[in-house]
Length: 319
Image (tube, rainbow, N blue to C red; front, side, top):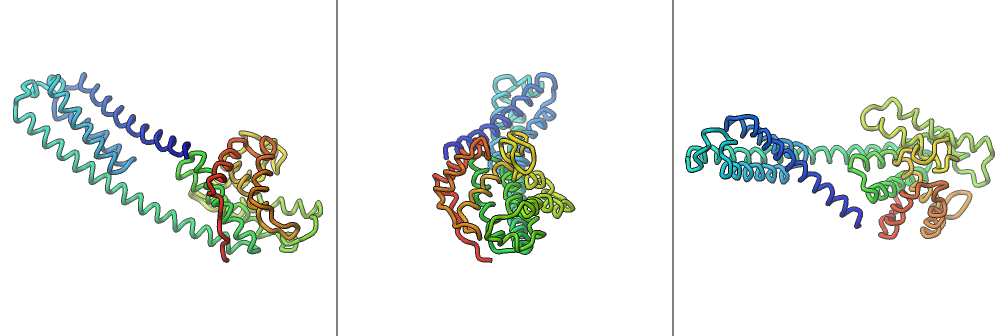
């Protein structure tokens, strides 16, 4: 919880610092360019930027900050705004500033509102997109365990990613990779997937091919799904380099290191043909024991934090 609050505080302050930096930079331009109307045009920049990238509230704050700054400049050093502003009692000067200020505030509210409407539409499209991904993962899965497993892993992985302070877009990449990380098993025979006895060396080799097969299946897809291919390809890599691929440590994408922890945790707490499920606490202990060998210590710490806050409890999905 503390890390999330810190992340939110840092984000807000970065936004404010950026807005005030642009306003200050605009003020410096006054030292080199004359002409009141031209200068006031420069003060529209922070508002447009805030509206386009941050939303209505930040846009109105940026506009208000620009208005107050210009009013202060006109009172303390009217020469900066041009010769016409020397007489601070000139009603024409102040009426011009009032018209500009009103126009700026209205624009800030309007453009910020358009930004928020666009964001809502984007969120609706994202929800539809991940709903379709979940349906796809169910259609191509060979068994009920794989279908539900992918869903649960997506919940665990996104909770860990959120605990680590990932941005929304990066969290959504983790979710998509988790939903589709076992898509390659569509080409694995059910006899291997459901085998209750120990797998032979040949069967282990066959199981291991599901990673590259999954990437091959998704490779023709464009857009944001292409970003998740390296995550899927590396989700069985181990932190000490003993996994499916020789990559180790920071060489493995962080998203894949998160997916690895979520994947193993769900496997441990689920019934399999060859063993009964472990309790969540037993599974957590095994994850912790794998620090620096199988798992990234940073990811395990985030996993433990989410586990303590009971954010890793997922109900069974009926498919």
